[in-house]
Length: 361
Ligand SMILES: *[C@@H]1O[C@H](CO)[C@@H](O)[C@H](O)[C@H]1NC(C)=O
Ligand SMILES: *[C@@H]1O[C@H](CO)[C@@H](O)[C@H](O)[C@H]1NC(C)=O
Image (cartoon, rainbow, N blue to C red; front, side, top):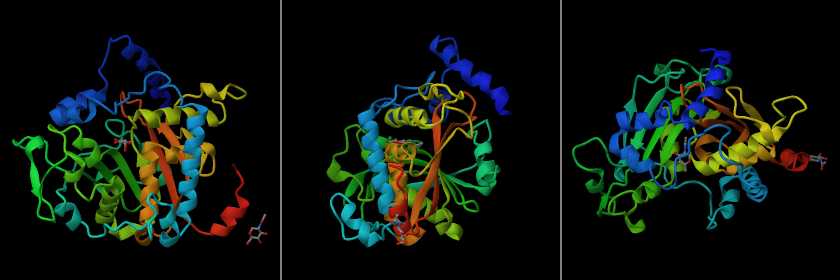
């Protein structure tokens, strides 16, 4: 599908949806047809899943934005340090920032996670709608060159309800599965990782009935460890070649508000116009260098923090990496209006040059 032909559709449909005349949002359809009750449970309440209608939600206020800029800036600085130097910046401070979870897939299995491969994925408009992005970063359009899977903690599709599924933890306790699930894809040759859903064990535990207390959560619980495990397991041929992390179709309301604010920092859509009128656009969308306020704020957002943590905790395995920039755009997925973010990853080198020559803030 050509971008020009897509544009009128993107502009017109939100109005139709608001008027209640059409099409339910494909997320909703997908949840019923493909995901069943499980997905509804996971996404129907707090934190709410936000659709991007019209111009999107109101932007975060200036004060909150500035805090995110600082948080993202700190992430960037810590990316240039060694694991030992980075440890003290963690809360609580650690001897090293390196993750202690290093035996995959064993530790995933031990803590009740399982992985199932997904096939028949479409990277074009019928599903992910990211071909123009893939062309730019040199990644294959053919999903058979990728590896897609769901890593989940409990299986919503068996006859046994998720609420009563259990496993025996490495310390011999019978614990309940939480329903955590991660939808991930990787293309090793181009060093591309795609995250399309990440619902952590801590988050999902609150949707189980009865709720699962903190003391009964799996010890392997951080999303950044699960996502890293996926990357490690399926791209060992190019483990240190990580170059792009795509966060596909963001429905987190906070991240959406940050995106709405960030795109106002880009040059105005209309030359000489008002940048606060900037609208989410198809690829190439808006590009931001790492040291801009916009990219730092996006890195500090709920969906950017996971990327930052993974780089900070996996310096030994991935090499010392940093974010070099990011783009925000809306995919060509039919009827999907939610923004996607791609973070570009590069080697963190020349820390001294960086610290004395970059004065963008
Ligand atoms: C964005 O972050 C939220 C909160 O952590 C998570 O639930 C959601 O799945 C993330 N979205 C993507 C596309 O990773
Ligand atoms: C930045 O660091 C380099 C290398 O240490 C030094 O030669 C240069 O003078 C410094 N520049 C500034 C502006 O301090």
